Length: 104
Image 1 (cartoon, rainbow, N blue to C red):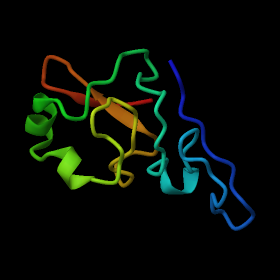
Image 2 (tube, helix red, strand yellow):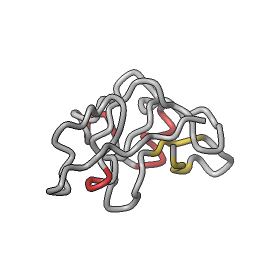
Image 3 (cartoon, one colour):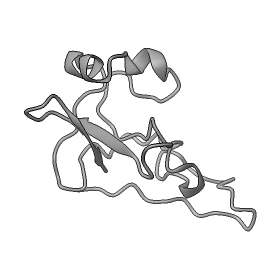
Image 4 (cartoon, helix red, strand yellow):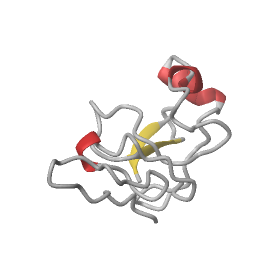
């Protein structure tokens, strides 16, 4: 698996020089991460595409429309769309009950 690394912080606790394609800022719970390589959970399960129909049904909204700046179109890369619920970048994986959030 690939763990999304936390970017280094400056003395002001901000990730001013963060490269959001390689890491996510801890202070915003990795919600700024926009990498294009990490698409498996910590347990090694392949993430589902964000535009999958079952994801819209499970979430009861279309994440592509709700988060147009999250870089989730046409991919399955880890993101943290809900930093108020989770501290790390995550993705959805299919299971018997529809789907679950799993940390990346």
